[in-house]
Length: 464
Ligand code: NAD
Image (cartoon, rainbow, N blue to C red; front, side):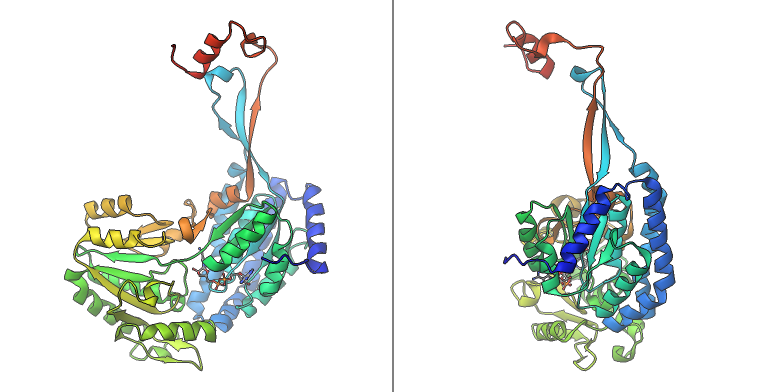
């Protein structure tokens, strides 16, 4: 990657944040809690603007717009637990090192860079931001230029709420992101696609800056024969067509036991009609595709199989109907790339082992969904597959359990966040050992003669 010189305002902002961080101003618990409270108040104040911006950027229905401001629930969780997270964590000293004490002391890292995507353009900036503030850092946020209305509201909200020496938004596109990436940060938190994830990691390597990469991929949804089909269909349709399929953890494709394939397709079609009506183009509850480029890419995927339901589209308002498609092979382009739109391919399997093998032949997914009542099937799938996270008999909800890490594995990402995992991601967990003076056994010091047996015993080596 070409290293660009950062434009003067970015370099200046970074200098100010570094100085502010070094002053120690961000470190006290009171400061962190007060700033998180201010962020909460600002989200409440700006909620109508945030929801309206999501509507402008993505044609989001108001209801789904609230997902952006639902970040407040994680903020409350963070404020409720921060007093505990911030405390030193006691560690146990091996017998050989006693007397003494040991603990892990979380400390802030410094200046953070958070780069976000367009699909949940507010929520995916604010969620890592609260972790960065909670951990006592300064932060520069670079929202996606492809959701310009939200980027503008976020910039305004942050400007109104924070000293730019503590938290600031730098708006812009690829050039801006690259100018920021050319600078040295203490941690980079990136949410976006795999391709750009590699660019971010390469840039970070120049400064040996650690990265968290929250990427995407194809999240499979396995449907076994032993299910409540109607409930499964309700949940799948909701999770797939929410935000017009532009959700990183949306079920990307279905892998269905062939015995229930027909009844599941019938239940899914019925649910699509129940949710979006006979003509989803007129439904107030269906989002639009973000831009023409994504629209053209998605329309290109439509002729790769048999359309069972949907398939209608109109470029003028970037509308694509909720679509079920079958007759696609594993080699079809639609099965090679993350769909990230309202198109759901349906593949079948006869033997669960084959379905598992097919999933395992592909890159490790961000999420894996499994619908079944059968405990053995649950265990088999959990033990024989890997994924960033799993939800059994539902979709997407696993990412809103603040007590669990959210992140990918393999090409779906590295590192994790949410709740304490955010706090830890944005902290250095410093190990500390403290020894008293009153006992100082001689066996470890030279001259070593006659001391080896004792040393071997100490470290647990067997006698010759
Ligand atoms: P993207 O990778 O295209 O862009 C993300 C950010 O990177 C934007 O802010 C953009 O300005 C910047 N960027 C783009 N090109 C760049 C370049 N060459 N150099 C430096 N910065 C650059 O992603 P997107 O299209 O905005 O988002 C969609 C992707 O994000 C999907 O793959 C989706 O699965 C993934 N995603 C993952 C999560 C998660 O939490 N794991 C959440 C949402 C989206």
